[in-house]
Image (tube, rainbow, N blue to C red):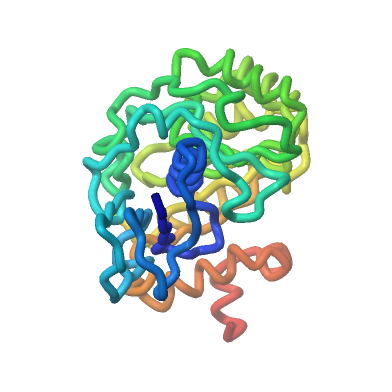
Length: 295
């Protein structure tokens, strides 16, 4: 069969589902490639991760006998068959030779109002794969897990990442409330450029959790610990600044994430620009000074 693939988002980040579908169909002897308007396909897979806020849908009908749409941008009920889900991704689709992408766990017990993971994957973090399912020796690993530390198998999985000796990036962040001394010791042995955490809800005081982890974590560089700060979602500017100043003063690097950024107030956009421009942020210690300076 002729198989066409469409990455609707096209945000320069490899689409894991499409890489798995490519691997599966190539194993069946099918011809697989990116969609070409001048060709007819037996099946076209159309994958979309984001909704209309961040990713516009395609404006044409694919030339194919069957079109299959999938991804959270189209809904939460679509799933890959097990035979596709548990296959080594075809990294050549995106020309990736140095990085592996995948999930060791799925699900999260937090069920945050702004997050779809609980509705899509369940309110329990559970192991879904061994590292060897999507990693075969690449020097870098991009881990997509929503809450690995909430999984009962977390220590085993952290050991797999440590033993790989690959440079690991957990791009969804770790849950600071679950980062005890044993976890800190494991993370201290893992090859990472940065450890990511998040402080999304200003109603939850996570100060002591961040303080304890900073004391237990072996690497002491400020640039080694980043905290995502969600703003423009049920928080005041005072609450935003409290979280930003608190984690900074504890030796973490805050990074502002704006909810519904296209419709966010200009002050929120200024806040993000100030915090995320690290040269400016380190030079100008207070947001009030940044605004007074006319930036």
